[in-house]
Image (cartoon, rainbow over all chains, first blue to last red; front, side, top):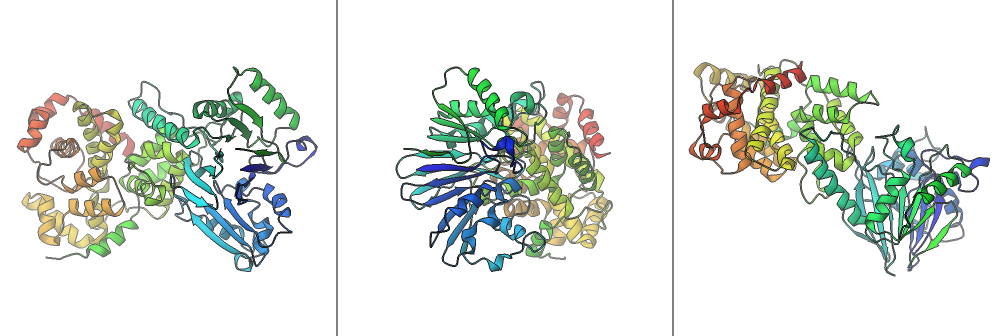
Length: 295
Length: 280
């Protein structure tokens, strides 16, 4: 498979002179399988530029996998132009929201109200199919197998493992803060909670195991994280630990913190690399426009 | 005899409101960005309705869990504290239990009985050297074992008021009076609901049988004993005036009878005080 970053920022689009190099769009990753299926991980603002590359195609068949419904991961969805082409088919995948008990159809349904957007859902011309996925249950999309795993975040968030028929594989976390035990070791609930956290961690590692590319939410440095506990995001450190434990072949830091300039990103990246004991995997900063081939 | 319609009853329960004090506390915690997640878990766990709804959602087929999750703590590890907090709040938003229901079941005393039975059940699990990771199941079993009574109090308040009066005035076991008058008792209702909500099998069985024959399971024995200890010590009151001695199986399990077990457990006032501190 091949994949390309169309948006690597977290939280809010950040256009401007300080974000030219790594880009200012929010999360969107395009995947082309060896059988030429189009899969899209999240519909942040980056999906608009992606959509421009599809304008000459007719019909378009696109499979959009949403990790979760926070704005920065769905904001571009109404701007995905193939939605307006009558011959196109757009499949939208996601989980069942535990609070509202509604599936991923809610994302577009909420966005496409006249108060927020000038075009209503009924005016979309493409055939739209919604798929509510269950954690751990693999589905086949063209030549690829896709498996969602629940990852801790303030809303239901799926990490997706994508396995192509050519043998290559990728895992994208969406937003992810590794659970930490709120109990102190001398609390009576500490041990049981710790054991369950460890079981959950093993489940997550199994879902990521030996992927060719591991793309991880690494919003913060360790120092910054101290003040952001519970916000639902990871650090460079936790991303590295995941890659090491899951035996991933390539690690990509993404969901760059919106206030971070290109220079600051690179400074942090150099510091992280210099602190690293020769990892047996490659480490990259996700950059808008960069494309990678796997397998 | 006033036979009640089970299907209507189940529909009704799905819309049941949560307890007032826990809802208020949860709302306070939700508005505090620095709130301790342990306290949020504690508040949810202390409210049978919130707990059961949260567990119902997380155990629904959509989350594809191989092993059912039976404690709020684990639900938090799985979905994150905010999802669980929001889920509990959405449950709470449906409405709240009136402070005094028309059936005359005292909610505060009922909650005290539920909370102390939960804590006692967990304590007995430790005594039986049940692995700590299962302790949450014992707590939830204790918390929810009488849940069927709330349903009756809200669904058929007038009938249930009569049931409570008969049990009290004639010193009869509440579950027997329920069966006589309504054709169904609170443990059967609890089972029905636990099944409907997809709770773990062992919890369903324990709730279903907490007044029945000895099942020879650690959870059922602990729940039976915890319930009787709480009643004997008058930790709250859930409408049943009769304390039952341990049947032979339960006695074998703990190696002692009810009063001896209470003596061996030592000062249990802290369990009551902790529950009271939470309620008040």
